[in-house]
Amino acid sequence: MPQIDAHLAELARSRGVFILAPSLPVANSNGDMQNQARFHSPSGKSAVQSKLVLTPFDREIWHLSPACSQTLFDTPFGKIGVAICYDVEFPLQVRTLAEAGARLILCPSCTDTEAGYWRVRIGAMARALENQCVVVQSPTVGNVDWTNALDINRGAAGIFAPPDMAISANGVLALGEMDKAQWISCTVDLARLEDIRQRGEVRTFNDWPKQMVGMVNLVELG
Image 1: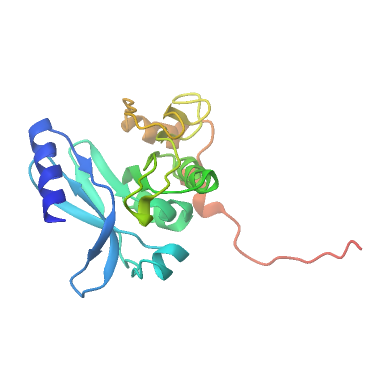
Image 2: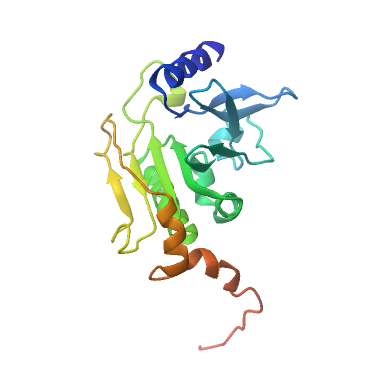
C-alpha cells in the first residue's frame, strides 16, 4: 500500500489532478480489514473512504469489516462523495452525502458478471436521478490470471446525470465500451445541478421528504 499510495500521490501532484485510487483491503487503526479507497489531491493531501455495506464475498472470502462513517471531500470545484461498488445500490447512504453537499459521487467498482455490472450501473443512475447529482462509475475490466480476487472483470465506465433536457435526455453523459480498458471524459458544470433542483422538469432532490412513509392497507381481491 505505501508504494501504491506514493505512486498515485506523485501522479496527482505532477499532473495537477485529483485521483481516487482503486479500493483495496487495508487494516484500519483497530486492526480490522476494510475495503478502502484513498482520494489524492495535487497538493499532496489525501483522505479515505471505506466500504459501508459488504457483499457475501467481502464477508466470507476476504473477512472484511464495514466502515461506520462517510467522508465528504471538499475540493476547489465542489464537494465529492465516494460510494464503493455495492454501496451505490443503497439510496440512504448516497442521500446522506448529497444532503451534506456532494454534487459528484465517485463509484469505483469490481464485478465479475454482466449482472453485477448492471446492478452497480442501475444503482449509479438511480442515485443520480434521486439526488439530481452526477455519479461516475469506474469499474475494473479485463481478466487477471494471477489472482483469484480479480480473475474476471466485467463492466464499462460511465458518467451519469439526472435525466433532464437541460443537461441530458437519458441521463448518460459519457459511456465506455463494455469490457474495454479505456478513458472516458466529460465536462460537467456542477453549478447547473442546483438550477435543475430548483427549476428542472422534476425536483426529486427537494421532493425526497414528500415520500409516503406509513400504513399499508391489504385489500383482498381473490
